[in-house]
Length: 459
Image (cartoon, rainbow, N blue to C red; front, side):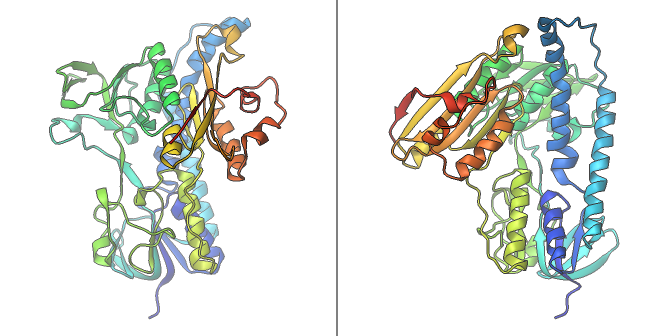
């Protein structure tokens, strides 16, 4: 059978764009469909605008810290609309670059929704036409969940991170539901910009899955700043009257705010995609089930990125895209490697982490040595800010291989974790860290100067 395209990609996010461009560079006839905007969650309503908001929210403390260094700081004023407007300009610029690069690679673009008709046929809704493809790649990403549980009334009154980036008016009071990295980051963003913030989480401690010390450090700092963290809570009812949100918890507490933002997880974007017509198997919450090569149960259909609900990070989607291209178009079957992924929580201070937590290391059967250093950052010896950094290494007690690195410090935790990730990928041992000369004065030098073991644990 002659197909219209060798590859049809559904979704113009980072993974889909990379796969389409690289496949086209190998001579494939490629088309890509995107119904919203190029760049996906990361560029339009995720990583990039979030990091810009983080920068904006850090200036408040920066002005306060400057006084200890001799600066006279005049009265401050923050304009939410200026921030949102400038952010929008930057997002528009980045989206145009993504689109330009796809076009330059020779990929045909369809700015419309695409849905399956059968295993090889795609229906383009806006133009009401069908096209066929030898291979199809699903890269439709995910979206914020609004599922507050069967007992909650009034979820329609809440916003998600999607809407938070485009609010016309800055909320002076905001409640954030959730305890993951998105909830934590937005709690710090809105607090830094001047809002009164309450974070409501059903679990016992924020940042489930992260290292326990990092969770405790951030909880303490957020509480110290005045962010109210309410754990073991869920909402029973939300109501909006005269511009105010009234939120009732299962502890019969009444919380009031200008906005309530849901950050209670993300779900794969597969609704209405027609995957059942193609025979593609789906898992919990509609995720596309794939093997280690990102292939579905249908031989010629693959899926990458958040729609597979594996590791929901932009660089992971790009890595999966490159593995797909090597497997299908370079004749080099390449399984996806999800081990040792550096990640960061852009809270204030931020968390950078790579490798295993204590709990994960013990579950995998490692006896571990743990090294920890807690100290006041040099900058804040003059700023007067009451803040402590913490660096932590988890080491295999037998081989002395570094299994995990967890960092809680202002500004640089993510940057440091990225570089440590290279060393750990190469199999660095504690002796390798110890033999590296420290860069002084820096926070990162703690990683190569920790000589005294804090404690050991057996699996």
